Length: 93
Length: 88
Image 1 (cartoon, rainbow over the protein chains, first blue to last red):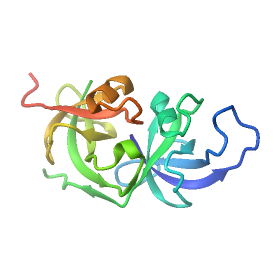
Image 2 (image 1 turned 90 degrees about the vertical axis):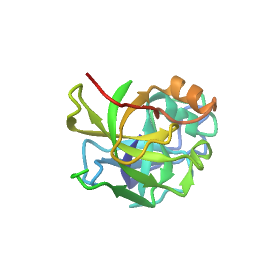
Image 3 (image 1 turned 45 degrees about the vertical axis):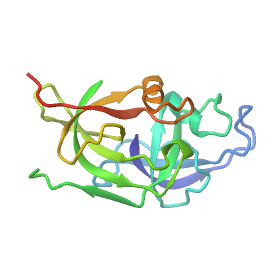
C-alpha cells in the first residue's frame, strides 16, 4: 500500500457491471515525505469518503477490487483509508 | 517476501472496514545487504508487533495477506509477518 493525494475526480456514466455507484478519483502517488512520485492513477474510492486534496493510502492490483462493494470487478487501484498523520523516524535510527 | 525496515507509522481513522483497528507501518524496502533500496517503501499491516527501526519480513501478496489476517475480503496486500534478527 502507498500514500497518495486525491487530485481529481473521474465521472463515468458507462461502467463495467458491478461498478455502479463506485466513485473514481485521480490519485497522485507520493513517497514517504509526501513528495509526488510516478504518474497519477485512477483509483476506486473504497471508503466512499475521500475528497479533493486529501492524503489517502491506496492498494494496488487484484486486492483493490476487494475494497469495492462488489468484489469481482475490474479495478486495479482503490483508496482504502484517509491518512490523518504519517510519523517518520529520524534517519539516525 | 521482502526485507524492510520500519521507518514510520501511518495513522488513519477512516479505513476500509477490514483495516479498522489495524496497525499500519511505513517500511523502507531493503536490499540483501540491508541497504535502503532506491527509496522504495510500502505501507504494511503489522501482525507481529514490530517496532520502529526494526528489520522486518514483509509479505507482499494479496492471497497470503488475507490468509494471515484471516479475512477473505480484506483489501490488503502488504503484511509484516516477521521480525528479522540477522541477514547473513
